[in-house]
Image (cartoon, rainbow, N blue to C red; front, top):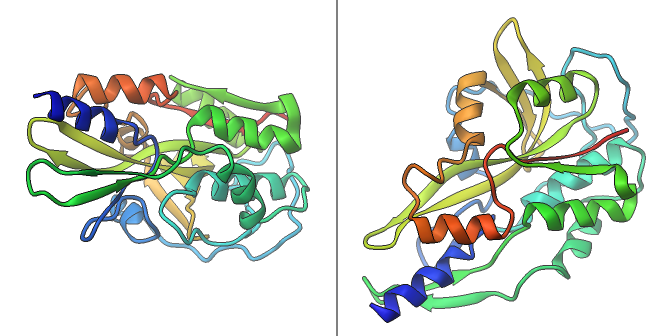
Length: 250
């Protein structure tokens, strides 16, 4: 039981991304995160590198393309780069990822007690770290809000302020341990009360839509639904809470 307890604590340090060797990959890239939104409608990404913020528009915000995610952990820096460029900073995905990488824990490995496979675990970007990295460019204007009301998110986006939202895109279920949620950062860029749809830019530089209901299910994370108390507690101690957003308040 001591070994299982230690293994639980080890895998519970997953805050944003998990890589399982050899067969399973968490928010790796660019297929699995989007599978959760099968009803989404794909739109062409905007290729402009020089877009700036304008308040007052009810149309989806068009974000500059700063590069597609190409690893298993950096959805946070990828999303942050888009917002920072939107506000006029000369950055791209590689720039923000390099700044963030220095703040991560080292990779860890442990052996799954059920099938003896090695599992590699690397924490991604916790909310506070993402906020701190963005503050390098935007200072105290970078805000972080857990347990955010849906109306607040809608009002931010419709006032021209894109928000990075932490959502759940699946999970890995391990007997006797519980479910490890796969978490992913996306940028919410629009909200349409008439169609009841959220528009977001994903880390593959594509734009998608989700119904209000589907988005809120993903945004709520479900940590109290199928995640063990020990794992949920460790996630929360790393700042992982439902309905978390990070944005620039300007």
